[in-house]
Image (cartoon, rainbow, N blue to C red):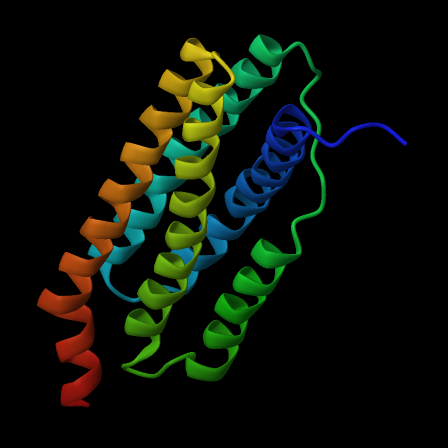
Length: 164
């Protein structure tokens, strides 16, 4: 049996988030289509474009690590996205739909923030400064998306859901 090192853990987690980002890319257009709020639709579209960049950065990190870009099924993101799809089904046509979609999107963001934060730290510990920079850049974008969703939910989506 091979030793399980921090490098092994880094590689496995990298494959996990690579799967997650590609899955998110497929989910974002569905969420944008389901949203009623033009601002929420725009936020999903903006994040879709950013997510394409995240996938490209991850491919660069794999290259820096000396591995081919490879995905490993991420059960966590599968479950989070399934919950978002459930919200779409259960709240379609309801005023609370957009608040629910924003909440589902934030669950995705929080997962990504946890993964990118960890990967950036590990890249630093492994002496992979270029990979650390790429992962940290994505981490900052995920954090900004989370803050933007919070602001939109508090200013518009939650009050609309509550007023109905």
